[in-house]
Image (tube, rainbow, N blue to C red; front, top):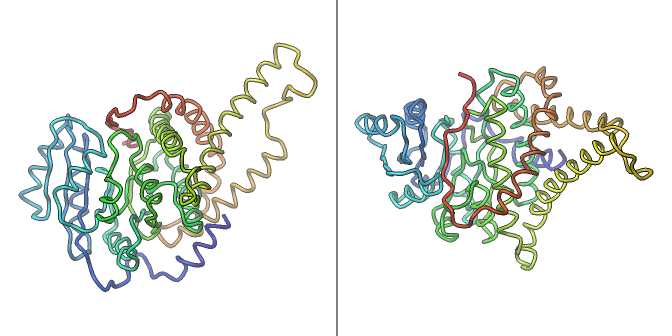
Length: 392
């Protein structure tokens, strides 16, 4: 909360409204890269939305990654309607990273803005993100600000608060520190030269956004957060869909821990150590919670050594402090976000369910995801399946 407040005062408070992006001294060509897998219900709206961007020099590259629905047919139809659209058809599903790498080979643009095939980008988002590249040649990537548009269930409404008070605050705090754990895979901009320096996206990482963020920063490229670069996204609204999404995120984070464990031996990588330690601590917390649960259940059936059995799993006074901190955190996140969309502060009371709905899922997926990532065969393509996109 302290880091996010500093970011707001230092970088965000005096910015103009979202629909009044700053004028740039130059406008390098931008390629909007849209990887698609079974996006027949969404891709038409996504392309139409990108055509409305206010950025002066851009093209759209849509990659049909072996879709089994009518995504390819729709994209071919759109070619006759959108002169700035280019389409790549891949015969098989090779994953998001492979799709982005294919698109990167087809354009001479200096800046790549990658969005998912079901995301709607704010018309001025490109201007807000490109300004960082123009201002500083060491900026390698800029992550945008995803906004949840699936709000028909309590899980959906909780995610609205999560992206504001949890993800938004984390991005601000990490940017204050100077290192970011991950760009948002649903909306992020990259400098071509920076990607070329690190070898583009890795095809075997389940969360290619985490991996590319780490590789850029380990090569001393700057990664920034731009809260005015808004992008409306679809998110799961069922427990099953949420579990699948968070398990993939957990496995991707575990892959990063395993892949970059050697950074501790390199003094030049020391600033990434705190980000590494932060995620490692979260993972350890999950296993400690599992051990606590096991000890408590065991104490119900057998006599345990004095002082070892847990009297109850109810958090007591600590839980009250945690709940109060949660309310403050959510309130602060909503205060920041009032600049970007209409914020209903009454939703803060919906978020009392956040620990049950999300911390428990985060805990269980972390515990389950680490061994799955540990024993995952190296080099296997990280293909994707159609995710849960909310209740329709």
